[in-house]
Length: 474
Image 1 (cartoon, rainbow, N blue to C red):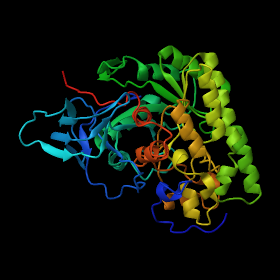
Image 2: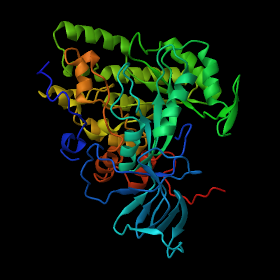
Image 3: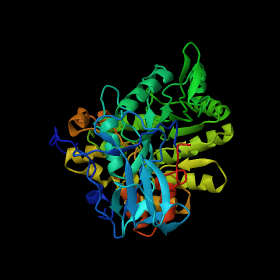
């Protein structure tokens, strides 16, 4: 360990603008909220804008208005004038009329009701709201609640132009997937300020989970479904489930369990997600480093060399291919893992890769900072790559389509919470910020640096589609 904990009771977030390597800065079980964010004084810092005008997110394309949590207000009648609309297929100048959160008209010289609020967007790019495909607003560390819950996290998302998130339900080991889903759904319904969907983690596999997976997946899109013993209940509509190849004796699945899970998900028409790291090697490396007296945050990245991510990605793809199940690899952090994904994609394998805000915006050299709090703020798994060329490489693969989606994996902890592991890096709660910064990072690192066309960026920031459409309730 390099030094004692500094400022242990301050909140810490990654300032991507100052820490970036260059020195610059599918809705699942979706639930709609026609909202705009209220003031968010605690929102984390955003990068300074790049040389091109940045995106202005459109309101969510939503269904009927719902009761809103505190801090969120109902949108009414808005006219966005003079901006350049950027869709995934074309860019064009037009005005947009929005009523109660729905896009009603797109064109010039629009007829709108009196009293409509007008927003001057001349010289600006107007884009559909982003979809953050991976958040963890309730945290993953047992016994420690993340600093941002649904209320603050979704406010930050809206401040950064993201109008929908997909949060991960992480049941306690041995608990019911259905019970955990209902718990997450209850929290999100009462707190979320934007649209949301839920994906479910599978912490342990046993045969009886098959029935729960079916209950979570079946009858998607019908609003109300029959549940044994409960009559009509809300449609759960989950179609993605994540398994872990790391966290031995806690969350880690064996290869045979993964194969069985993938086969079950294939039969249900769901997609398998995977956290890809070799948990057996990591555990042995952690023991070795602690015996050598390495206890600080640098031990986290040393115990998780890039090879353990790349090997696990290759193994997950192999198992998914044998099970004939589509695969989504979360948190692609290293060149090696990204290259394995790209090669499989080019060979026709149905696999998707998700770099995150941190892997696109900065590098892992900060694990060796003499400021313990700063180094600990970067602790996440897989770790941010120490190779400073990694962000550029990931951006290139996004541009070519070998990687397809960006998420934030937003899961934040204060320095006081991170300090639980001040004498043992294996105990530091894992997670970084990025829900607010994600679209700015993609824009600056990919579009402003001429790696990705604006229209391509829409597919990356707002999958699927990335398009502004006229929406009605009929």
